[in-house]
Image 1 (spheres, rainbow, N blue to C red):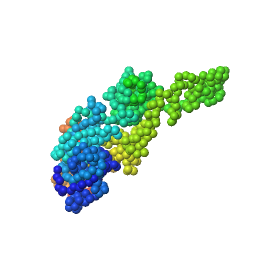
Image 2 (cartoon, rainbow, N blue to C red):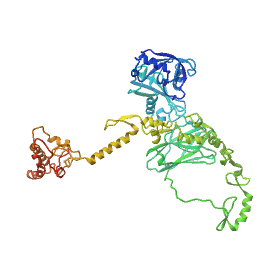
Image 3 (cartoon, rainbow, N blue to C red):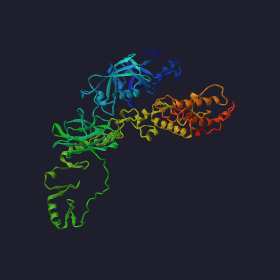
Length: 635
């Protein structure tokens, strides 16, 4: 670590509220930049990149985002503030505590070993099994948010908007205890500490998650499950390419209730975080989901199916039920209209306004008396109930939204439809929702923390807020995909720098140019060659076919050239070219005698007779190259 020039200031810590909490880049006052420019010779071109500082007395190293903080203050992201407190800072560094910010120059990193550690919820699985492409997610976070790594640093970042971020500790670095990781080829080694970080559910309740089971498609018997109250049971279902659609069915045992949810990317599905859900009332013991082929990202796709048992869903300590998945055809509209019967006469029957059924005319008076005496109709939902029955006593309507159901549905209905929720993506009024159902719809569509598979890095990452670029909005990209696709690579064909998001269009341009060139190309006179004819070639050949015939000897009338062509054709026809698998049967080892071979060569040589009339001054011979049946073995 190099500490020259010596620049340090005593500054007050302030949180960088508008900045990413998982970044290591701080905001310094303009006076720090002035001191840095003066020490670097007064020229902006002398500024190092990146600019790194050390915060004492905690010895935390970090990068610099900008120089727009108020004089006498340093704005630090929340994650770095926590790191400073953990490294022995006395007091609360987020409450205007004075720290010493010192400019340092760090060596470029070569190797880093990070140890993963996590929560107590799930110790039996490794973090990589729970999250998937752990290395890719970590490297993507380091590339986008980190400038420096130092020994003892805790690297945290969220996955798919989960409440609990993934965590790693830096346990080894080379060549120094603090290194710069910008524009370096850093070798990263990830080791497991025996505990794995669990991505929390993020549902309406603080549910725990059981180990994954395999849910077989079209199994002869449904899968029986038992789930502790307040927990979620997650299963993996592999959907093959030939399945047009899949119906997932949960049958709850009597007295039990749960919600059925599923997702393509989220392993820890919940009533809020899912792609498909059936959170119907406890009075509906059968929960169903239909997953269409068009809704899946890949031809063969594994989805995660969860059975969520909330604490208020059942009076039993353990939920019991069965889950099955069966192949189904895509739903198609039959075009038939279903209409309710109209009041009054319908042929030979009349319509009862009380129970809403068609009754024969002959029995209508008797039916009306009986129906009015024994049946009652709910004014709220129109349901027909038997008077003074248990069904009528159990009938219920929500006092807020008038949703019908039974008395046992009230607790779950209020929890899902009338519980205020605030999404972690904002914390302002725009991120507040009146119900779990509304927040779930937000989480699967517009939420900045929604988990997506990036079309460029192929990682499961949060989609981010809407991109500011008009081009990104037109292409339907969010912030992550726009920034990820804005990285450049070198085109292998033209060596131009191309954005990753423009690679497909760039290659289409090359394909168009190739088609245009081939359409206007003058082909080689060799009928077995598809290359472009070389300019000024006396035989009308391409450079590859003309190469074996080339000689720098003085030959103004091309007599020697024609002799070389004659000898090559004669040897090719009588002896062959010596290349295995050659398909030039008529002109390569054709089994002809010397006289027959000569008779086949003479017309070709005569076609080049105008070459003899050319002088040393050159000129263009009057030869129809396309009419010459020249068939040299491919070079």
